[in-house]
Length: 109
Image 1 (cartoon, rainbow, N blue to C red):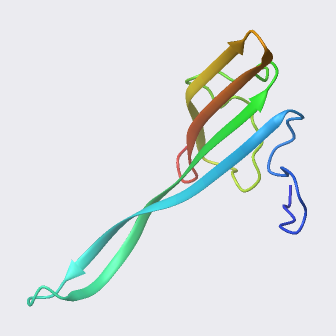
Image 2 (cartoon, rainbow, N blue to C red; image 1 turned 90 degrees about the vertical axis):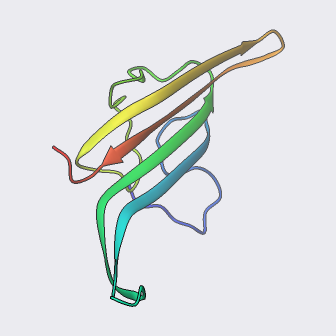
């Protein structure tokens, strides 16, 4: 699902009532210092992606902590995805709302 950065609106997920999507890509790093304590080299390893979604209405079917939730998020594919948090809210004068967040490790199996 390609994302067009010139278009307004959420394109990263196909959830009709999504309000926001945040995706953060990270890697661990290990620097190598020389005998004088100066930077000599570095390696990046263990890439991961953290994501969070917020929306209105009922929580999308299949979204539960400890699962992959069946969510298709642009730019996240392969590896292992785990939803680590789910929050549902209700108010007397507003629509139900929900939030979920998790991590993807693209090199895991």
